[in-house]
Image 1: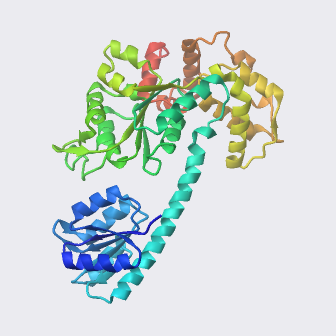
Image 2: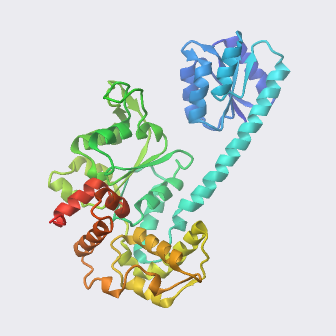
Image 3: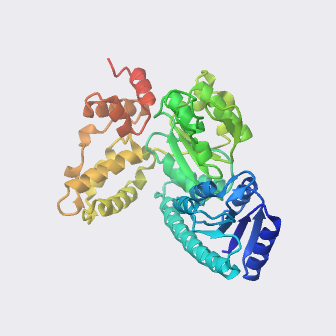
Length: 443
């Protein structure tokens, strides 16, 4: 990785002098004459190691800008230059994350030495981040998604093909089939892998709160909005935003989302000026959005915009041949986290797993394996460690019957606490209320 340096100074002669000195030291030097153009250079070159910045600039104060740069680019180091050095300014600069604070006119060798130290520190920080991303990339890589059934292999193949594009992706499938895992894997294999990945469950917030979470707000936009707040679209700029349970969006928020998809801009709550972003959207739902759009519950134009590339994730019932592999993998992973020895899985355990209806899919399987590990005394998972017996399986695999029975069982477990039931089911509270009404579970 090259040693890139950015100089932000409105004094052309000084900026040119510093640039020449640094180029002689084999640095690649970029220049900007104010904060605005400097931040634009940083957006286009996020591998810059060191920023040399004047304190007094035409469009702002360098001491305050340090914090903004460090928040966006934590691996970079910032050296401040000023002709008017003061102790309060130097203290504030260091608190804001500056590497050091220099007075213009200091010995050039001192500047070169400080730049070298700052560049070395930045290089180490970039390397640490790179290693962390490699670990995270391995964790969420498509190759780490287990299963050899035709349905899961088809889903992984589609995900791999679309990952390297910026195309919007719609993941469809039942609750617990691994939609967020797939979204993370797509991000990790995309050109945006070094940028931010953020996820939000659209069914977990009220309409007003969700709008603020997604688009941000200006101070005073509503009661309690004491200061400006960035929304997830801004936070995920140049990265990926995963919108789970997209079918829960209200119609007016659907319109705002459509605008972002079409123009890559939005308006914060309480603001009048649009904000430009560059965000890839991956959405997910367990609802039939085409049917919802035909019934007027979901905008047809948004559905067609979201479903440019659909990937259907199979339920666990559709990939029962993968159960032994999934169970083994989950048992190994969970045993390390729980610090419980795991030796093997008894065939009778697998036999009962294959007979269960799995309305909660992979999420339910994970919970079952975790419970079994806690109950085992010798590291062998046996049938009597399971929370269900053969009588709990269903004669029919009809989805509505499976879902209805599972929701009723979870509601009984939480003694009617719908918020806790929604959390255990992995769905939004509004989705749970809709299911209760649909299946008349409250009667």
